[in-house]
Length: 238
Image (cartoon, rainbow, N blue to C red; front, side):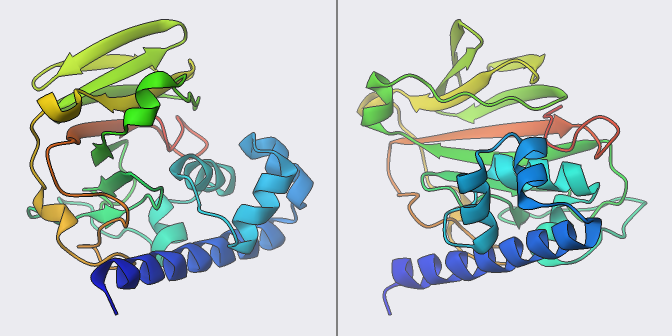
């Protein structure tokens, strides 16, 4: 089986397992699908598709479900609870794959640390020419976000304001405001394929995301997300 097909199959299996855990927690919490759709801010039809595992799970959906259930995202992704309290070390290429969205890789590099008040994420966006001519899709979530560009260029839209950041630039903002990010620069933007894209996707900590191509049209970013389930918001980026 081709590598891409194997990765896609693993990602699909991971999504189904995550969806199954979300359904189990919803039933255990006594919520209906209608209530969950309302609490997560998703259309009921979309929510039902996500929970059934018949549609790709966006990171924002997984995050908001974790927030509603007051659990770590790790518990939804792997069925495990973080245990480390002294420190956690993540080697190059490590971390927990937390996104299965085409063209985006999001990896939590501190997922094993218990009761953390900040979540550092390693994020990669593929450059997409079509996105350059479309409105930037925006999301909201409680908390604050700090984005630091490691390589490449990104355009961020916060409410009606747009900014372009390059390697070494950073931005801090209230993530309760509508915001969205795309990679910019096209073929003039030289990037490299980072180590964390070399593995196979799935529950493996070294996993990668199908659909993220190798080449110059890659943007790398480090995100630190601050928040707490029920306290400050799990998805908020520090």
